[in-house]
Length: 347
Ligand code: NAP
Ligand code: 3JM
Image 1 (spheres, rainbow, N blue to C red):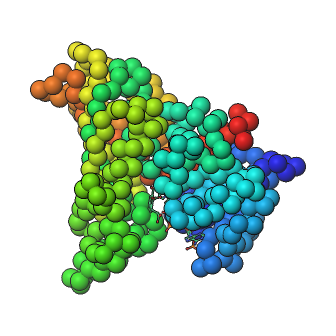
Image 2: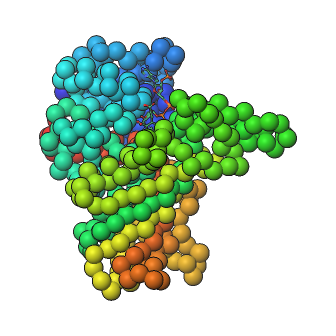
Image 3: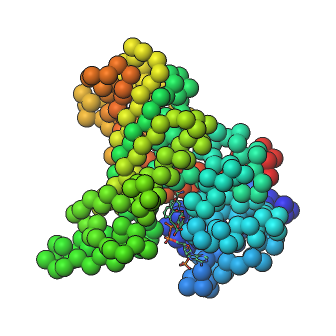
């Protein structure tokens, strides 16, 4: 710890998530002594402004962490796998935004509203869950506490920014091409590394991340496995379908849950979510009140609406859950983990 707080590094500072982290750090009062901005060689040398000071972006390498107390990683899984252990060796505590360590049993996977105490058990790395998982568990944890959950089935409607800055550019370019009657060029989505690419503009792609041997995509398996781990419900049945849609920011989810308690009504669920931390209930069909990706954009909370009881099944309920994927889904949750580390002296 420096004279004046802690030395922070942001790895992937020039990316979609990294930029959002910097924007949020400007407005939160974390005790920052020094802020180091790290990226690949492509952006090294670039100057970014933070709290009226110019900071030069540097290449991320093992010795970057020599004097760093807390590092926030959002530069992809392979960079985390390579550099997070190097940072830990140098005494840095890492909050990692990638899927690299989430399912490692020595690594807490944390949404502070849900399982803040898990942070205590860290061995140098705390993982930030996937964006789609974060907003879902934030909405479902209070329902599990009140009524018990016995099953989750979710379908997602995910924004392109979840695939990074290049995916935003691809949607803009394809939209122009389509409206000009030109052929749409697909070079990135659904997944950078996969064999085929399809247009996202004016389309819907039922593939986020690579397919696994079981027929699910990796994004779907992240939701399944991470939800069980964060909620401490290893046996909870969870099933997911993840879909990419052509809007820029905020993910929406249609979530179906079975509760354990009998005889509940939609208003019982509404009453719980009205009081839940980090959740805002926007549910009034008679006035067309429900959240959308645009209404949730640039907000910190998780918004829930459209709560309905299954007409044919007493314990089944539908919910519509929307949150900004770059804020609570990534940058904000990472910063909240760092805040809890500091205020509870869990570093
Ligand atoms: P992005 O816009 O493509 O940005 C990628 C960032 O990583 C850039 O700053 C890039 O630096 C940096 N980078 C790339 N290769 C690097 C290397 N070899 N060494 C150091 N830095 C490198 O992507 P994004 O949307 O911000 O996402 C970044 C990562 O965060 C994702 O890959 C994912 O693992 C994670 N993520 C997590 C969530 C979540 O839900 N928790 C959501 C979105 C993303 P340059 O400017 O030099 O290229
Ligand atoms: C969101 O490793 C990579 O290339 C990044 C893939 C990625 C991830 C991930 O698996 O870390 C892109 C977008 C995520 C995520 O949060 O799981």
